[in-house]
Amino acid sequence: MNQGRLRRSIAPQALARFKKRVRELTPRTGGRSLAQIALALSRYLIGWRGYFGFCETPGILRGLDKWVRRRLRAIVWKQWKYGRHRFAELRRLGIGKDLAAQTAGSPHGPWRISISPALATAFPNAFFKRLGLASVYVKPVE
Image 1 (tube, rainbow, N blue to C red):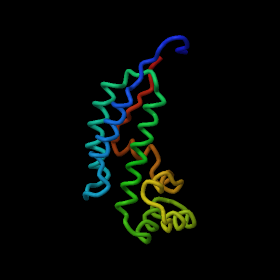
Image 2 (image 1 turned 180 degrees about the horizontal axis):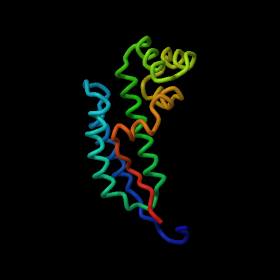
Image 3 (image 1 turned 45 degrees about the horizontal axis):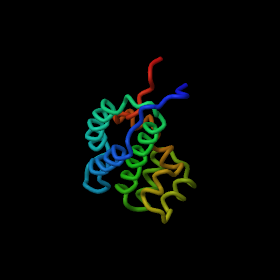
C-alpha cells in the first residue's frame, strides 16, 4: 500500500505523554466506578484521536486501544479486592467455576491478571463500547 514513501506516524514522546495522561485519568484506587472513569477517559481519547487520528500506522492506535482496555480490566480487578469477591463476581459474569477459581486464587498482580482469559471473557471489548468508552482507532472509510 504505502511502499516507497514515508508514512505519518506518532512520535514516541507523544505516545509516552498519552500513556502518562491515561494513567492520571485512571487511578487504580480512588473509589470511582468504571462508568465514571470511562466517561472522563473518553473525553481525552476523543480529543487525542482528533489530533493524532491522521496517522498512517493503525497498528499503533489499535495497540493503544488494547492497552487502555487492559488498564480498565486491572482497575476492576483491584476494586474487587479479595479472592472470594473476585470469584463471586467472575461467576456472576458467566465465567466457569474452574477458571474463576483459578483466576481468583492467582498470586499475580492486577496488571498480569488483566490479560487473563477470565477477565477478557468477563469484560469483552463490546462491554467497554456499551460503557461509552471511545476508541483511539477509527477504521478509515474507503
